[in-house]
Length: 635
Image 1 (cartoon, helix red, strand yellow):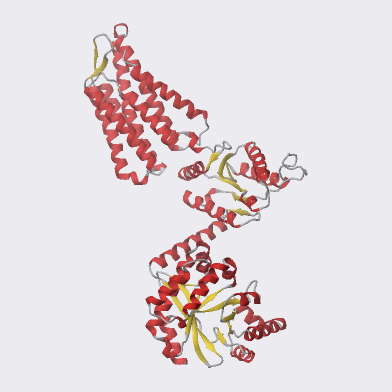
Image 2 (cartoon, rainbow, N blue to C red):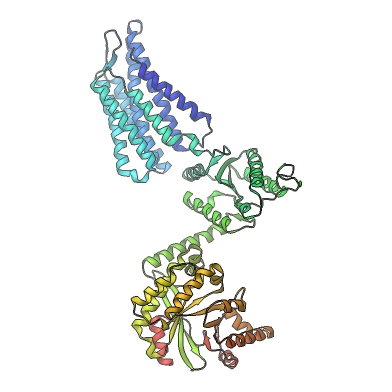
């Protein structure tokens, strides 16, 4: 009997089933379809062997039984095409749509199965090893199966961009092998290749996509980060709530703990987590564990167990802690009391990423709970980030100018360039809303470059010098100060607009001076050599001291709004500001007082010898045309 190929296919499938079942699975929808495909292919091979056995022994078996079994085998071939199309469709559509598609397709395949069973079938066997069937039932089988397979290939071609590329390519290869085998068997009925080709296809899917080992972390046996992503996506697709605790131990690498101790403590942590009840565990980073639960009761119970255990410390009775003192790891916690606070899987994954960024920045333990307030703040941040990016791309980053008054010349001699973002509807976004996010994401560097170029263009095109403006102050962000190419880029922009360097004064902050001082000083020297001057902005805010003034080659020191206002509120602040201003003047530097709001404040500061005054007493920041009008009228 010609069943060697079928037996080989059965052996392949049994081995795949063993390896698949040996490791626990996530129960993903796509994996269930794969398992269904494996079972159908297995049945197809068994029915193929059984049909050959019955044909060979048809003298001892009722003919109707032989023909019925042969038709059952033919139906299993159509079922192979059926599961292939469902498998491809599940990766493209939402699960609810995929289920509706499955129902409709099942009706169609059911109709084809009925057609096969009611159609005539003929049997060929003349002794030896050649036995096969032919006739209308077989033609209906090949037509139905090929239509399903071709429909799947067309779907892969048309909607393949929505699929995982590996899944798309693996399914295509499986189907091509199956079509070649089917056509070969159709042209030469003696070659029974279709069942074996199906087994080869299942093997391709297993090794490329469905091997449970791809979801497993080798060091612990827990599920890995890839498994967590797939798990979260399926929970949302199935509209099932999820509860979780994410424990990050990334901060231990920032402490003075030996690597041996860290590894020993992590081994204890893994052993502890492995024993947690009713918990699905994911090891999502080197020192991060995500715990998932089916209900809120288990979530609360395990959350308290985990927090209590970490408070006790680790390695208390370990050879790695010879002094007998426990090692306290102080983890970061992310508590998810309900997955329903996130609208979809991508938002939840974004929240996890946001949490990890906080972990990377903080060395101290903290707890973040994903409640409605946290989610609302994250959504506002994400919406503002999109607004910033759109504003950059659509040229809606604008520059406003706040006039600066010279107490010696009794007129306005400069201005500070201040960034604003205009929404698509024309309204202005206050800088306090977008600057922190731009700084956090690094976009502040790009915004700063835009402001500088627009300022240079404004100075050149507006000819503000004839109205008495001697220079414009432009802020430098910390990100820009860390850019080694800053000086070269700014010099090139000034050359682009043929702008004399004396019209530019760059403002740096003390935080910028602290970040990467050598890079900043190198940029400052090159720009000073080119003729640009510098101011130290926000003096009096944060860790201010005169060392920054002595270290930084600045020509102007600006007292920030809070320090200026404090002068009029407390006696101590009066002594501090006056003494500081005197020392700055002794160093032959100029001073600017920001935040001046009344005529009385102006008079007092003039009496102290402050060189320049900036504030709402004179003007709020103005658009370019309004600024020109203001200067023309006031100067």
